[in-house]
Amino acid sequence: MKSLKRKDYYIAVVLLIFISAFTMAMIPEQARRHYKFDKDGQLIRSSIEDYRHWVYVGTPVTPNDLNPPAAAFPDFHNVYIHPSDFKYYEKHGKWQDGTILVKELVTVGSTQAVSGKGYFQGEFYGLEATVKDSKQFPDEPGNWAYFSFGHELPLLKTAKAFPTASCNACHAAAAADTDFVFTQYYPVLRAVAK
Amino acid sequence: MKSLKRKDYYIAVVLLIFISAFTMAMIPEQARRHYKFDKDGQLIRSSIEDYRHWVYVGTPVTPNDLNPPAAAFPDFHNVYIHPSDFKYYEKHGKWQDGTILVKELVTVGSTQAVSGKGYFQGEFYGLEATVKDSKQFPDEPGNWAYFSFGHELPLLKTAKAFPTASCNACHAAAAADTDFVFTQYYPVLRAVAK
Image 1 (tube, rainbow over the protein chains, first blue to last red):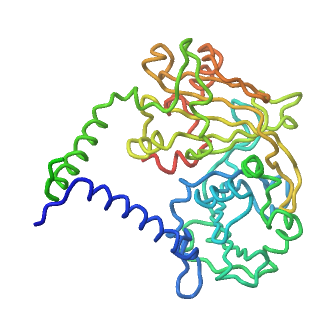
Image 2 (cartoon, rainbow over the protein chains, first blue to last red; image 1 turned 30 degrees about the horizontal axis):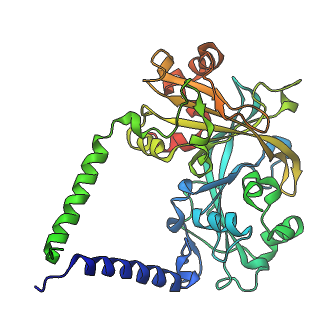
């Protein structure tokens, strides 16, 4: 084996770093998305199953007892965003193509605790998601599509995008100025948006 | 400069990796804690300012309108835990020495949205924390101490531990079986606890 000088190795390492960075920058946007569709275009739940380690966005609660006989979107919704999409939003104040937000549904478990009367989280029972994907959903408003893995356990393994009228209608009516995301109810998002 | 063979570099790199891993394992538990105290034993807020990137634990809401004239712990509390403490909890089902949980206070911003009646997050206005630290708090129940950086902006830069009776009394009364953490209101914790 031909011996090499230490300097040659330094040069090789620096070159390798540059080549890696260049290659990363060349990977098409689509390939960096943090979710997967199956061959029928359904969102695959296992591709986003680490969402509880993502960035927390906020929690509205619309209890059934305030919306008789039942709330349209019952109980607690914990919303999470993929860290790389959040990072982009922090930097640019807008959603990048490929953004995914996940909404976890939790029952109202208790309405009384030592801290007072209110609403306390019970058990997980549902999972929903929205993605902004210009390639998959070129015709949806803002390229957002909405999915539900069900409102009971066990959750579905894949989910089909809802028709435009089912979800986008409300998002368009109440959040069109903020690219269809309900930023008004999520201080985490407002705090970082410049 | 003396030239070296490629093989020598490989050996050096492998050795370096082993030495680093060994050194990490030797760092005492205390040194890995993800918060800092000042010289007076006050918790330093800037040492935990990345908490919004930690693992989300849960959100109770105790609105003032349900607790007239005012709730003891008003509005929304978003609770976060440091990822490494969460990882330990996932693995062992108990809290490691050095665990930190942060509680962010958020106003009730709206009680009506397109999704129905309920409680929607408004603005951040407070920050609290609890740490389990046997070195700093050998005499506290479970070694937990509680801190508040205030309930109005701007937040305090440092916070002094509350006297035992102020916080630990309630935590002991309602959560002594779960090491003083209100696991019953946090499905995220119950889901991972074996």
